[in-house]
Image (cartoon, rainbow, N blue to C red; front, side, top):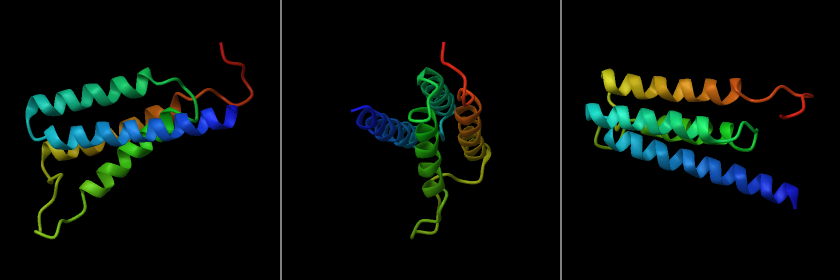
Length: 112
């Protein structure tokens, strides 16, 4: 039962990361959209419990969407262009990955 809950948390966190990243990519070209996407992304990763089954899957789902969004489309353009807002969005994905893994509890320590 415990493993089933952990898998459900993992899948749900990854799905949440995908949804938040899609929303951030959709509105990042507008200055307020970039701020809103960054605030929502950082708030979500901080609000998730510091567990291996929640924060890292969220950040990896987020980064996977951005990795797909920076690929060249058949039309020859990109969803995330090489401009300031695009680089800020990519930097945000890196920050989320670092925060997700850096804030995990150390192994062998009891949780408060």
